[in-house]
Length: 460
Picture (cartoon, rainbow, N blue to C red):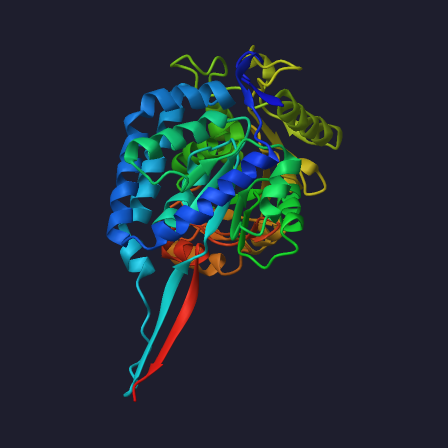
């Protein structure tokens, strides 16, 4: 069987290839099991050399890869290049902290005993990555997993299959042992077959809540680590003391970059009533300056959504909100490329919204944001926590002490102050509630791709 990748630019077939089969899965896992044991016995210094070469190989093809990303999922080519910059930042950071993160832990010394805790690789790890940030979502686990001594099987989204190929070719040029890193193009049924195989020792998935449940179901007969990053409905709170111009500029970008197709993008904003009117006015005016169109053109800064079904979903959310009393502040006629029945969708700002509307409680994953007026910090926190998700939240203020106080009350994996829609590789990327479980990035990310073993020796 074959699959086709449809580019959202013009809905033509951009790439076509064969789906892998259960026999292919078996061969990949058989080879990974053999080579992983040899890889685990190589020194960390040697692994670092291989992975550094791999990072350099990927970055060397930055311009080619950026264009491929745009053609596969529609992000403006002027912005796609930054994904490879982000890949390099995260990969290099995780490589640089590998020795410190993987070293043994020694408890307080006891005479006559040698005691320590070492970290060993899990074995073969399956990484399932989405299309929206195809390199940035996969690199978070890929680099530490290999550095820790694991083999990795990557099942990437069929919307961005060339990302997997770029990885594969870069590893080959870097001289990585054959079979240590493999790619598989699979449908949902065979993906579940892969995960259920006893030779898969850990799973890391980024995607929808439904996908997360499917992953859990596939591995229900095994007790293996399972990391799930399942998206968000990320809020921002703009306090009365916020820098208005700065907050507007960053929150508009956080709402509409990548056409809003970011798990940590801003989807709902709560603004202190004292500055609400000024904030909304400036936010709308800046939003109107976006240029929606062909993402291969250098002056386009808002491309199509990934699929017509995705844009239809957001359009329906907007229509539902309007029918329930919301007000749209952006005239779609300002964006002539925005048309029903296409992936091209104008950015939209909604006011007079409330949490009974799906646009304020269900992940949109598109270029729409709702803005609500609040009277106090307490009201803002209550609304921010009124969500099934908890990936990131941002507070916009000049009062760091107040931000610290509020951060302890917000149910989320990351709290930003005066920043949003960013992953710091030095910090743990994690979430609560339906956002999932597990950690990637930071030194704690290495704990997810290893198992601990206690060494307790008594001298006689």
